[in-house]
Image (cartoon, rainbow, N blue to C red):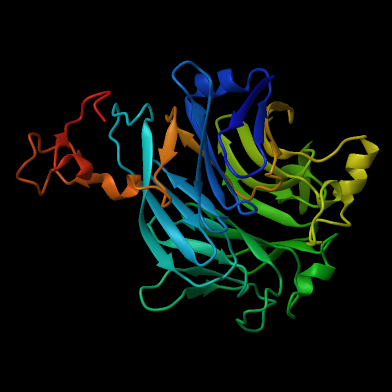
Length: 388
């Protein structure tokens, strides 16, 4: 096992524990991982240092939840904004040993919509689960949001979190499926249906495909299958459309939210159940997951499980102990060894300036962006390894 503590001050320590071969797996696959925890208001970026040790990078955002990654960009929902973070480095560039540097460039102010999953269509349009208004929506330059679709059982859009619509699965670059905790059409009605009222809906046809799930989350279309997390039972699996049922392939010791894929593996986010920690929120309580954990003489964990799609085995895991007990979303960053992001609590974001070479007469190359340190009176650093 590998243990590494994240440098933190003024709060209980965070310890991240990896399975024995987890770091070598990250190195072999040449990927990094990103995940959100709204409980402690953090975006985490997990990679490897040059000597092969775990790299843990965290940035503060107000209640971050939904996370979506493209090759050069992260989309992140927070309490009342939806952020776009762009990578500032070209392939081969490094900044303080990091090969991916995400900078907050744009923020859509949406108001507090309790945004859960976020996705980006093939056209580039952002789509998100507007949980408060029980609909899928997109951003607007004029309004807090533009509704796109709502489940057939929702009579009207109202800020009442009627069914706890939470998940989006894109199919061919368009919203294909959505998950909700129930089919309730009254304010907070989903809370009474947590054990077995969860549903899967075909966004394109409005057809209810499954109606007996338990707290379903994170539907994802991968390799011609629809995968999802049956969070209330702790199961990861896929939808058998022919039989009209959910087929579990793996049980994980935690409340599941957040699902991403890479090659033959699924990366699943785990949270502790509230049976294993004090919490005034009861959404996780009274579920079959608690009984299954007790039967296995196990406690719930917080972290990431890396599941082999061919065997259903958890090949690798990464667990968090300490202050963090809940995760929401996870993404894979392919061909990234050590990512970082600029935040708002230091002056670094003030002084890290990139100049568009296509528009700047001071560029020595028309194809390379330049990074300017405003504290050094306009000195420009070209694209050279180790120079910035």
